[in-house]
Length: 576
Image 1 (cartoon, helix red, strand yellow):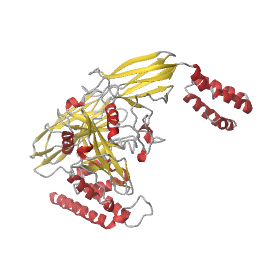
Image 2 (image 1 turned 90 degrees about the horizontal axis):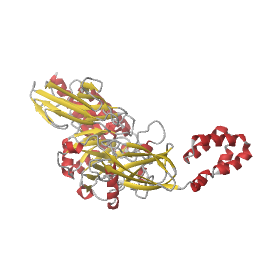
Image 3 (image 1 turned 90 degrees about the vertical axis):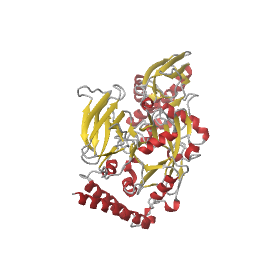
Image 4 (image 1 turned 60 degrees about the vertical axis):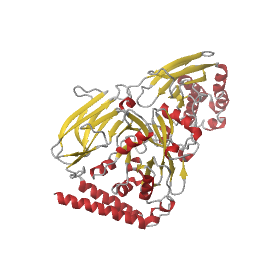
């Protein structure tokens, strides 16, 4: 029972008393009308009478629980196509509040910020995962049951009534609105932080199957002082697979507030260079030798990652950039730094990751992690008819990807996939096709665009002739007059978005950079280098900021990038 003294002490502060008592009684699933009558009665009888009345009122939930015989909820969830039980995400609520009872069959794993034990059975939003079925004893009453299985299945909400001494038994079937594996595309969450031992593998597999994530990238995290979320093995020894669902180990380390956060996956071992912590290129080179693919997290937006992107991107140390994520904003697509590198002629693959359990979609107040969810953004990789770790990794290496939080894209240039490089002759005709797939109720499409050097080349909306909120198409022909990069992106309701890695077209071997914006991006790159120079000139008293210790080595790297920028200037002047 809550502290009676607390409520009595708040009595003189009428609004606080009303608010706290209202919140407490509503969480105990007492109806709004009954709560209103209780509060009005207590306020009318004075402070001393109120305290006696409170003793009775605060006992109501226990009395009601004892007098209300429980009923039983028994649920089976199956895939409509296979008619077999399927892993699913479940949320049970009553009167808008989550039911704080966990079924015995809920799949529980410890997770939390900084590798702490913040959660176990319930997810941050009070949902839970089960492998196809669960049972639960509940007080008689009305409840709402929500069932979800990632972006490609249609979510369901059901109203159910539990009666005392009876069992509510039901089987629900979840259906797909699209099947990307049949198209050769497999989803991945490239940014998950959970401490993992072999014991957790089969349990975690239920989590990613319930979100329909085919590849979960499990990242050990580090900073200048410490490491978090260790993985029991790396490379192929750290891979765990159940049919076409798997875990791949990797690392988010180094991580610094001056240069941003590194993402690496696929290396046969982890690499941590404590003495050279701010020399990211050394880590990239070592991980590359071990078979790893490397890039930056958070779109380069957070933690001054744009500085690191210039240092390492212009020296061609990077394979990919995480451009879709909810960490910084409710608008998850991060294009600015991506287009910066692309327009300077640097090929880089688009990936996405949830950064679970750190990042959710609620940026209006409270803790963003309360809505953190594995797979809330994802990237798709083309593997063709066969799915395996080697084919998935090779598809990622080639850049055959698009990122999405719901909509699905199909994009080709002369039948080449995203990430492909086309060597064209001047005037050669390019056939560009793009399709966006959505669902009229769950993921209604709004617009589809083809972009060239970051500018819209063609656009259709769901309101245009022969277009719908479930399917948008574009096709055009374009003569190859100069090197370009081309990509597709689409937008849907509720901040739905998807974006492909570009197809790169080089004309007469001159690359795909954008002559119209190269001067701007050279100047912006120099601005970022000056920022870093100023940052490392003086010792910092903060334990987080340690770049000043590496001043000499970073200045050498800045000088190397400046030589590259000068070469770009000279090439531009020569072409004019």
